[in-house]
Amino acid sequence: MSEAVLIIDGAVASALRLTLADLQAVDPFAQIADVGQIDPKRKGAAVKLSALLAKAQPKSGAAYLTLHASADDFHASVPLAAVQDRALLIYSLQGQPLPTSMGGPVRFFIPDFAACHTAEVDECANVKFVDRIELSTSRGFDNRPADEKAHADLHQHESK
Ligand SMILES: Nc1nc2c(c(=O)[nH]1)N[C@H]1C(S)=C(S)[C@@H](COP(=O)(O)O)O[C@H]1N2
Ligand SMILES: [Mo]
Image (tube, rainbow, N blue to C red):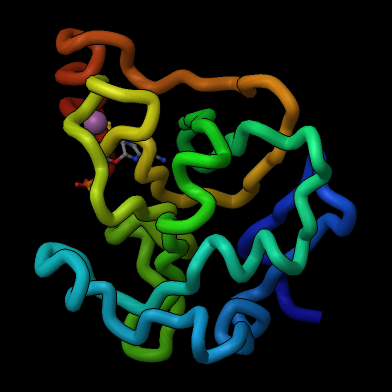
């Protein structure tokens, strides 16, 4: 069995362990072949979060979605309603796994993000190396930078 690249769990009826092949096998209607069509600065193939949530079936009380990147211990928790119909997961480039240099193997992407730390759903919530999406009834763990200084420090140390 191939390795899971993304886990979806928490307040869901059916927890998911998704491999690259599972993401590639998602319904074509939920696939974006090239995110460059949405944002010219981005590259790669993506799948709609909504299609994955349809498989996981969030429980009725689920109100938050927490994006966990264990690779660099970065976490962001956002209201489910704000992202469920628009967020994407970028997962491959030219048929290969999305490279780490681009936030792979899986990168969360909100196409119309707000500027960093201006809103609950901001550019900082475009979590790279996301390996687990946890649904919950109340807000989950979030260590996004809280102010300009913390944000500048993070970018200083960020592995690009
Ligand atoms: N895993 C992880 N994801 C992350 C970060 C990080 O440090 N680690 N930084 C965030 C911040 S603060 C920003 S502004 C964007 C930057 O994404 P970009 O480098 O693709 O422009 O990634 C976000 N995702
Ligand atoms: Mo950011």
